[in-house]
Length: 154
Image (cartoon, rainbow, N blue to C red; front, side, top):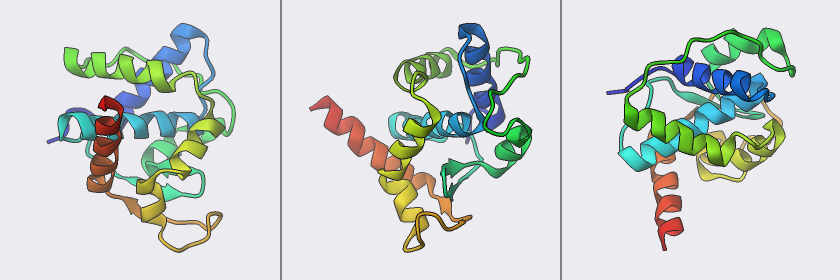
């Protein structure tokens, strides 16, 4: 069972950008939401939200979330958001995740996802610049990031 929605996680990061005067584009937002799902799967063995990511050219994307923010193009997303209501565990998790990923720019986050197994596996043998709607499986995300978490503990 998922705990929240990708939209609520997106609102968290948009709110954080508003608070800190930071730049968050649709591209960066997608990657932040992706890493939230990936690491939550790895650490808590359950999805943070139900929606699936697709392995698009510029990295993992949730199509509905993309459609909601595509009007901003490559520009910062300007939206007033109410702080989502999360459990203490989810709130602390997101705060820790933001410490690691929020300062990265969109291109850096995109390049990171392009070097990681879940996106690579989902795209298969298609060229890196070819469109794809292939689903990045939650299982692949969970396994890959669990291995990374274990390696970081060693």
